[in-house]
Amino acid sequence: CSDGGAAQDSSLKRVAVVEDFFDIIYAMHVEMGADPGRAPKHAGQKKTYKA
Image 1 (cartoon, helix red, strand yellow):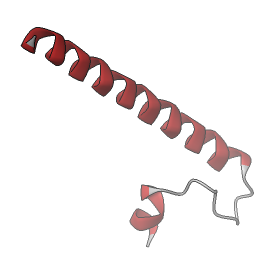
Image 2: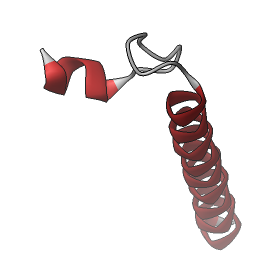
Image 3: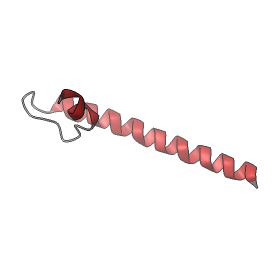
């Protein structure tokens, strides 16, 4: 039973990482597609670093 729980936990973590990965890629594309003088919709952490 504990084995199945561990496998499920790792798969959930993997899905979260994949979603995070695609979110980062999408944010990068949005930033590149946006105007240079305008902040992208998905500023995320970069906004805090720039400030």
